Image (tube, rainbow, N blue to C red; front, side, top):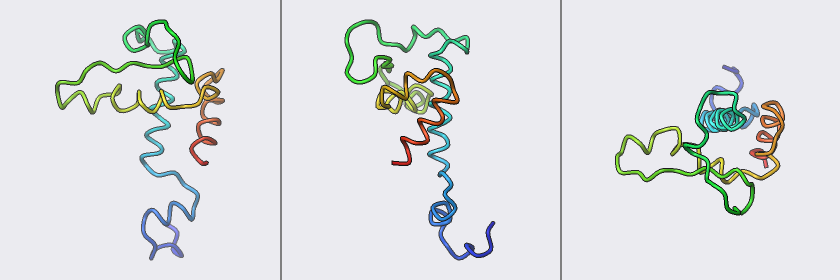
Length: 111
């Protein structure tokens, strides 16, 4: 706690200190997890969520979500992060490693 900022609201303190919110940190963590899975580092079958063939707009590594019939599924990993992943710029998606992805993702979310 910074004593001089004690009277400010939480969001104002984060802004003054230049810190990301919890939601922004979670989004970044989710994007890192998707990137790791897409690069094949994790032992996840990418065919379960990667769109097959065809031309896509924007970046070429779009992810697909399965249909949602249960309330539990809308809080799952795929529903939480696939829309954000699909909306990222091509240059972020095509990063060569995690460090490059983190740097590009930070820069993109600040603007």
